[in-house]
Image 1 (cartoon, rainbow, N blue to C red):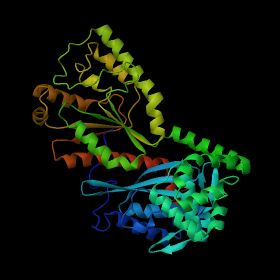
Image 2: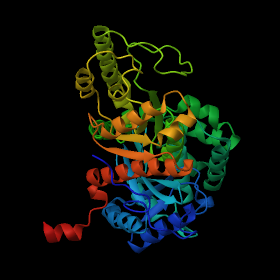
Image 3: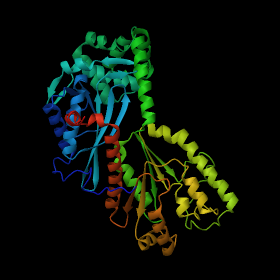
Image 4: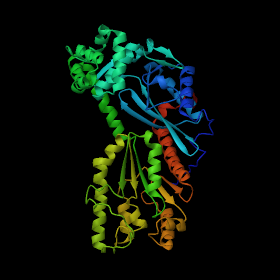
Length: 467
């Protein structure tokens, strides 16, 4: 179906003031909404630069009893023009949300990490209720007490097995302010035996980085020895979470189609840059996954119709092999990536064979290509790039104006296997074309979020009234 997305309408926010359009405007609004709705929270790191600068995602510990209050906060933020496009349940009772809004043609994104239960390496060393009970006020937000700052940062860096010089210095300062005895009591929750003393000594003498490299798996041993039943429960909850992520992937499979000269490379590069914070990672493919019948090293193509089509029988065999390649690639790589929150972008897709069979050297019947196109995994969203044929010819000149005109019409009529599509005009300014393509993704992601994650935005008063 054709997307009805238009810039400046739908999920795209209304015109925001210059202050509200920036990071500071969003974060101030967020903190205000949390306060007004009595949500007890703590900003777990990097509060010194807030609200003016946010280097990565914002980690917020939230009292588990206040979880239901967030739906009101999220609705208020969306009413103010900030759209929710992503929810990744990356750990037990921990969720990664992404809000976004347009500032002119540019997309701004803010990832928020809401933690109701803090698990690291099978251990829960940061009791959220205790963190909230001892929190301190800092400017317009709440932050943890020094001992919980120490516990959080140490647990996080131990789990990763590496630490930056600035973070190591921060732990040293915290350990000195707490004193060795209190610091060792905290590290004893993570490490067995004398390792808590070694870690604190490493904090104080500046040798923490190599110590954590050796000890980053030790918390699992602590969990096995001290909390085996809790570890089993955590493992079961993690398995259920992973299964849900597999059934309902948070990644997105996007196919970008269009004639030569329609600007696919430009739009893909701009689009992936704009939306990258909405995903954990990005993967790119050209036409097919290339796991089966790997393509030869790419060389510049100046005439995509130079080689003669293969015979009908050989063409059909090749095309069936390509379908198999799509399914093998999807099963081994793509689905796994989607489940882990990956944006998967295809520059061209199997459907191009229907529009331009000469490029694929397909000499078989068209009905066979259409039949096989119905068998390949369907993209979540298909972007069809379109521009005046004379403009496309001026950009590349690889195909004739008449052929480009024919392909434009064929892409407009293409519907085989496509679940959701958006036509993007690329005979306009580059930033406008990229903004339109990005807007299509934002629209799709926002609608998907509301369909899958109604619990985070549902108005319970309406539910009570209407059943």
